[in-house]
Image (cartoon, rainbow, N blue to C red; front, side, top):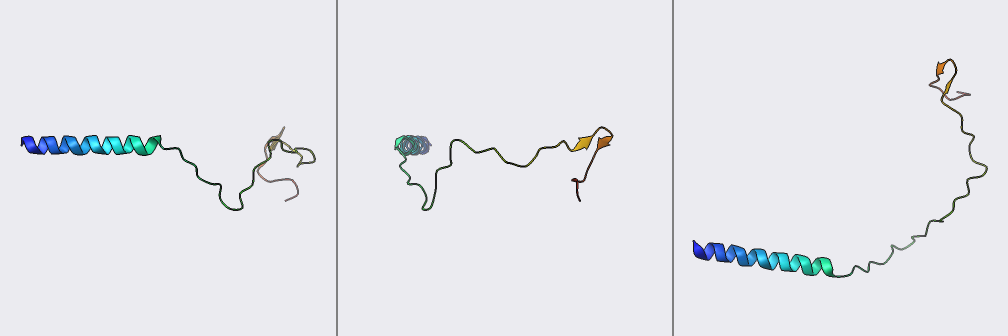
Amino acid sequence: MRIVIVAVTVVAVVAIGITIWVRSQPVNAPAPAGAIDAPRQYDTTGGQEMRPRWDSGGQVHDAPGN
C-alpha cells in the first residue's frame, strides 16, 4: 500500500510541475492570415435615426412603414 501512495504522489508532483512549466511559457501566437485591426474610433455620423419603439398610446410592435 505504501508503494501505491508514493507512486501516486510522484505522479501528482510531476503533473503539477509540467502544468506550471507549460503555463509559464510565453505565448507568441501569430495573428491569423487576413486579420485586420479594428479602428479605435468609429464614425457614428449619418447613421440610422433612432426612434423609440413605443408612442404615447402604448408599445408599437411593428416598425413604421411595415
